[in-house]
Length: 411
Image 1 (cartoon, rainbow, N blue to C red):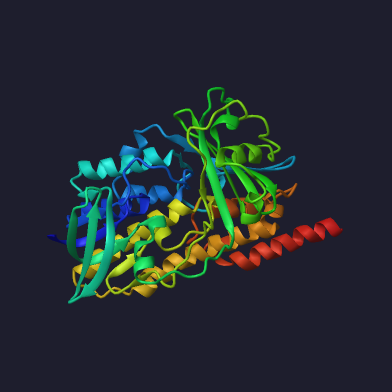
Image 2: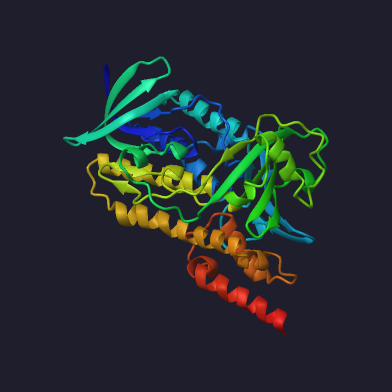
């Protein structure tokens, strides 16, 4: 068995792991990225939010990403029956990016890893972590590649960005009950040859089917579009047949988009993710940190996944570098509490979306411009800006605004 030594091992080459690797490469650290899958590979998380842009910039990816011609995303649209709620990121509370991208994740993630490879980062695809152990101040990681070759690697620190692979969560028994129960998702792509002009053909749209179930439409610059549903497991169970047949029948349940995609064949059989919400007991431990979906995933309704992935990946890389350089890092306050603050804000918005309260606020016939700007900043991912009352007092203020709306109806 081959033995190797690195300063930091990053498990997973998605956006979280790539951002961590991009930052550490700029600091001239000895790193290795281990990725179980072969890229490109399909996954969800195709709609980014502006907070991601800060992290891509700091990790050294921004110029490369800008050159790819990905579909720019300037906001989001929500539709419920005949009601429409539009959010423009340029009309948000506070500072920050006014746009981001809608991306085929297979292509997007490949751009990040290609860039890392060009910068000299060692990424080993189709390499699975089979076991981990910690002793004498070092992690020992055993891997096996697609050809069956086994390797033992030692490192001072592990950044687990393995996403749905959840390597350390499984190896170290860190799984915890999710914040959102019993929700699943299914999606596929089409080549949309007759795409409408303007907002109908270039902006992400969420159509509400019922309080707990919604449909997404995400157009990409390459002519493909992503179609997907999110809802409780019980909603999906009513559709019989294989995934393709079931998905076609789900499309018939839409109102706004009904019939628009009937003449298109799916580029691949719809992919289903069951019980999509994930959680862990804690985000860090002795010489390791969990980032992105390997730590926690809420729900795709507000596209927060990649934002938390890149934010946590970048922060974990910075703190890990300080630790291996001999500094005493307060991981609980500098990492876990910080990340959890943002997660708590988005958790409130996701939960109140599914109770229907946030939907009522979104679709109010005469929305307050100030409230809309403050909510828009949350949707853009700036969930650590406590100057925003919809961040600082997120649970109480949403409840209060909803009560005001209900009082209006009574009057």
